[in-house]
Image (cartoon, rainbow, N blue to C red):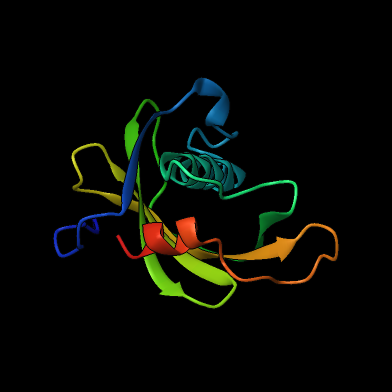
Length: 139
């Protein structure tokens, strides 16, 4: 049974991805650890697309929580899209939901979320979200 993305709102950010042979495991589908790499790349590209500082010598985001729901193995070869959505905006954190879907949007392979907290790089303690990130989350 394919789970679809028909009822989903428009993503905040979408990243197309063409799978590589090296993404596969011994069972001939995408290795579960690669999903984290795909999601990290999508988040970094989204942050970079903001056009303002989201990481500096003074502050940076750290991932404090990840939830991955493996809905269906991704076969090879395949083109997929990683869609990002903002679930929640906190004082120093944001919860970024994700969906990894087939290029045609008909098959859901993975969904879940990541919580990123911005920290002061000197102290390691949470600090307020950069205004650029807060604005991008509300776009």
